[in-house]
Image (tube, rainbow, N blue to C red; front, side, top):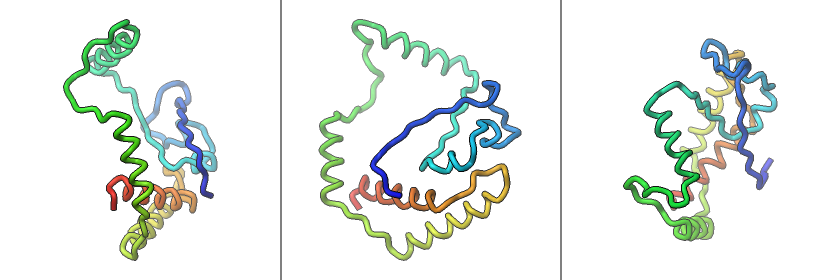
Length: 145
C-alpha cells in the first residue's frame, strides 16, 4: 500500500452547487471506493463574501503585474531553509509508534468505521488507517520528535 506518489484532485458538485442537506458522496456522485483512495479530503465551499472576493481578485490581477506589489507583512521561510529542514528531519528522525499512540489510532479508526455505516459518511478502510499512520509519522518528523 505504500506509494511514493501524490495526487491533488478537485471535484465540482452536481449542478455546480454544493447541497449541505445531502452527503459529500451524493454531492460529488463519486463512488466511495474511489473516494477512499485519498488520504485527506477537504471540503472547500466558495461562499459569497465581498471582502474575500475583492482580496482574491486583487491577488489574481497582481499575478499579471510586471512588478508585483509588495507583500503584506509576515515572515516567509526561504525555500532553501525549508528544504534543508526537511532533509535534516528525514535523516535524523525515525518515528516509532508507541502503545499510547497505537491505542489512539485504533480507537479513532474504529469510530470512523462505525460512523461510516450510514450513506452520509465515507466509510473508513484499512487504507485510511495506513494514511493516519503516515500522517502521524510526518507530523513527528516535522516536530523533530
